[in-house]
Image 1 (tube, rainbow, N blue to C red):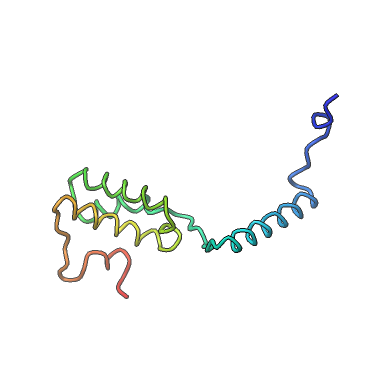
Image 2 (cartoon, rainbow, N blue to C red):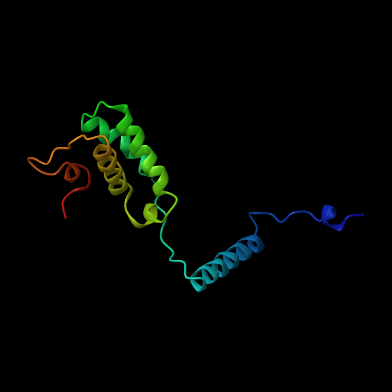
Length: 121
């Protein structure tokens, strides 16, 4: 008889499971830090959530711009940009690059367009 099939799984609500889970997370962090990974807090929201709203507010009717900005956000998730910067900033950067590649000028008067969404520094 296969011993593994006869062992009941550990309850995820029990104290032993919680203890093992915590120990595993701690060891994983030690391993990642040892290998040189920088650990960042992962945001709850993604820049995609803001792109369509920002494009609508900017009154950009070209759907190619929104799609290109969306693609830039997808690409940014492959590197650590999405954990280094706020999602609103990433959305603004993606829109700026998409507009630049489609020769669309964004308003800078009376103040730069991105300040409306992320504020001025």
